[in-house]
Image (cartoon, rainbow, N blue to C red):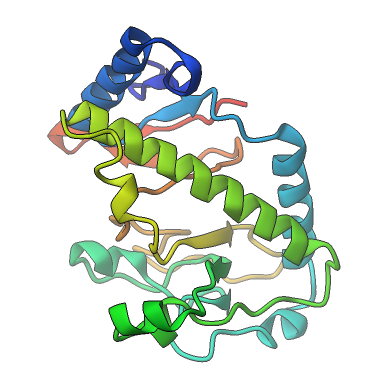
Length: 241
């Protein structure tokens, strides 16, 4: 383990023997029991795609605030579009009140247009709301859709590992997540010149628990990411290239 956070190569699960697949599942099981967070290698996502995603995302956030506000979500319930800095406080997810977090974000999600989905999800219009795409960067929509598809595929593999780790059918979870309302969210924490100092208790992003079955996080090497370990001890997470 590096800094208390294990790194797991999941490539053998994809192409290895039965024993190798079981070994990956055992590692994931141990990490999930110990801390509920682990770094993965061998994920199969193209480095070129990751670099392209980072590039257009940076270009989007570098735009004037007025351009980004044109893509603001139509409702707090709709997890789409631009979320300006100071409009969320994620510590509420764990029952802790705090000042607004100092980050801005942009969100898209999978599109589910079929009437079958509408019948299954009463809040279909919220969960599968139409995405709000910027005109610039021009390539953002194409690159983000490709990246979201890659993350969806990877998440399905992680769910299969969960199934094997828990001793049920390998497709037990992945087969039940074929209509999941997946969301891709990019978050920008950069402090701009002239911005006010944080108020007492205010953070870039407060302590929180994610709502979904599985979160895939791509983080840059800037320090700040922490995970709460056993004994209520915060562990620094250093992303591996």
